[in-house]
Amino acid sequence: MKNFLALLLFAGGFAAWYLYNQHNEAKEGLESAQLQLADLEKNITGRRAEFQAASSVIAIKGKIASKKTELADLNKKLQDTHAAQNNTMKEKQATLAAIRQKFIGQTMPMALASGRDLGQVRIIKIDEAGLSVATTSGVVKILPNELTQALRAQFLYSL
Amino acid sequence: MKLSLKPSTSLLLFTVTCLCLTSCKETQELQKQLDEANAKVQAVQMESAEIDKKMADYRKEIPAYAGVGAAGAKQYAVQLAAELISVENQVAQAQETIKQAEAELEQAKKELQTVKSKDPR
Image (spheres, rainbow over the protein chains, first blue to last red):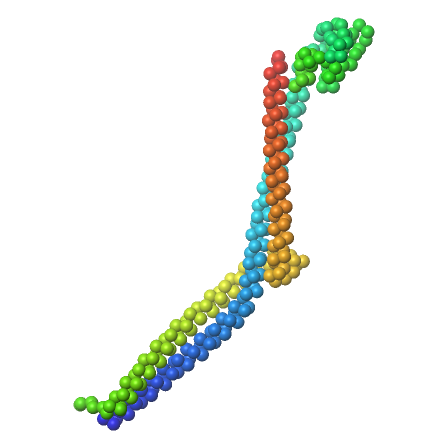
């Protein structure tokens, strides 16, 4: 019986020591981990801020690059549109010149918007700047705005 | 063998058992907290390594004149944001100009059609 009690006391003492040791180890480990965590958090705070700022730099740079590409495409499109517009204008001028050519050599009565009557005239030159006509008194240069509305329309100056 | 204990011995054994159980429970709780703290430490260390890895590339994108650290990066980000606004304005302006140019082109095409319709050839 005494031996049993001694064994029981020994086992109890051992268990108590073991649990105490475990408890201490866990407590020390926890304190150490908490210190390490605090230290890491302290160190990482500044780097987190730098990382976030650097991330936004990268994101903004990406957006700028994308917008610059879009701008280059738009400028190209604008150049193409202007070129197409110039070609259309040139074609229009060429077509007008070709149509006006048929009037050269024609003889017709002509009165100007001012009321001046030139009588029978022969058209000798016609272009965008106006027309030159031969009258009985000589060659007269007529500007498009000197023509009557009907003649302006006939010579395609009102387009 | 019949085990007979004195009341004082029984009380002592009972008390020791209770203390052991309590201590065991407390240790378990501490161990749980320790595991959580270790997990946090590991997560922060991983985050730190990830930041270091990415920052190695990101730092190349930040010019030296902008300065170092978070302040430098923030200052550069502000500059870039202003540049982005400027480029966005240019894009908006270019879109508007294209719109006008397209309208003018349409008008020129209409005029060309009108002139062609008067061509007797």
